[in-house]
Image (cartoon, rainbow, N blue to C red):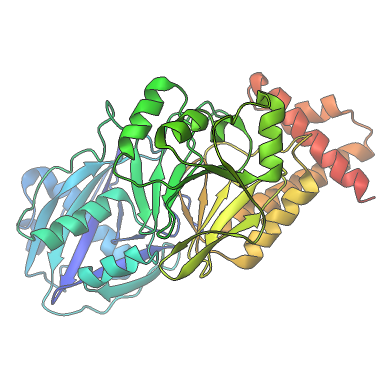
Length: 438
């Protein structure tokens, strides 16, 4: 497992926070502290800084000094700290596909140093009082990882409680993983029967005026029990389904009955679930039908609205607040695996249109149903461009009179044969779009 190091730079009670660029592959758009990976071979620490680090942390300390120089043009041997305090380390939870052993240090300086951010890594760096930062986070203005949130809460509660080992953020025997990437959004990650390589479907809790549980889909009774236990202190008012695919609603009906709440979804989602599971599937549950543009709930004085994003599934609805500080886009994109577009519920033309619609709206954070939340719409743009590139290749193969099966083996030469049925669906969806537009 790779190691990383982050520096909490402090001057007069303010911390230097840094927002990662939206185009980065690892935690894009997250607000964090400057730092980065520990290389296998690090230079020795400058002598003037060596005494700040114990022998077992000198290599990590050297990486910290290097990263601050690279990312901020900050030379700690010139801007000599009053103190460097080891805060602790945390290992990224096992449900995250990108895992690190992270080391945190508090670097106290007499005055604000002159800095110049590396724009290949950092969008901005700002001095913010940690109390003010937590207010901004609760308003949905910062996307954060769990250890940073824990560190800030611990520091504000007792600045002298460091160093300590960051404890696991959930009990895997009793709970499903749950994190708080944005103040207004609780994210739960139960194991689900989803499309590989993903093995979890994100569920969410949002809303003040009406507390909404979105897409609960634990894979079995045991996972359902842990899911219910995780939200036992939440007052859920409605279970909402973003679309009809089973990995977004498995066990949601018994959960609705146990919680004694209605269920909401689009009319298309409702009808498709009934057609596949029987007319009595929702028996005993009140159903609320929602559509594009309707209000789902409120957060403070802000409306939380629904947006039709068909393409992957005809009845899919995305969710966003009026200020567009975030958008839950369901299966419009994924950061684990890829989105399948296929008949009868899928339509490639509508999928392109939905991507373009959300890109045009420009939510500050995009939250998919599989994988982590992302800053900005860069992933959406990349997905759209990839699909367009795929379409151009199919047009080329059409001109060469290739069959769909031949296209499959050319375009998807490297995928597992077990995924061929899904690849065939996607090729057919591209072909339909191309022919309809001829």
